Length: 282
Image (cartoon, rainbow, N blue to C red; front, side, top):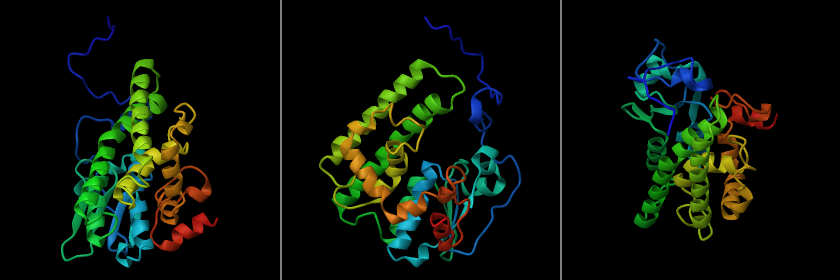
């Protein structure tokens, strides 16, 4: 029998729940008036270098590396721990108040894009890169893109929260989410035994979306859980992880809007390609 009794009505207790309790609120909308900054490039990104944020900065750097100058962008830092995502400007772009958010000013009409998968699809279709035209390859790409967006909440909001961030550690939720994460690692490892990339032989937005979550986990960059998850038992996934990690655009994109870690991995804001080069060469 459980000793837990739910309250008559659940309510927001900002003092209970650890580091992120104050942003785990039950209402939406802006908490304060503040306009978003606007830079000089056609694409304006508002983000922070969590895995969801890294997806878009890696995509933008890949597009630039592929020869698309129209993918030049300003990356403005949104400090989620300080509630920047609840400003009136940010909520105006993304009513869900989650990073990343993109404003595309390149056309006659401004386009506001939120949800990282939507941003990746928008950019892939806009520049004709990393989303195959061939129907079979396109479906395979979208299969894995949607797989990631159904799976990552178990890794981040489930395992990551209860194992790494929760102020108290409880065996049941940690074990339950750990087993699901290990199942997901096994899904990826078995698939990548016969495929170079997630959609087959071609590098796509499915890889760009998945690497910041599962690649970072495999490399020990997420939740300090590498050894406990026995990542060496997933050799195909590790091969894929390392191959993508070695891509120059991934090395560049992963540090944008990052404000923690080693100095040569931190770039709070990016407004010019040289901003990244200076940090990496530091």
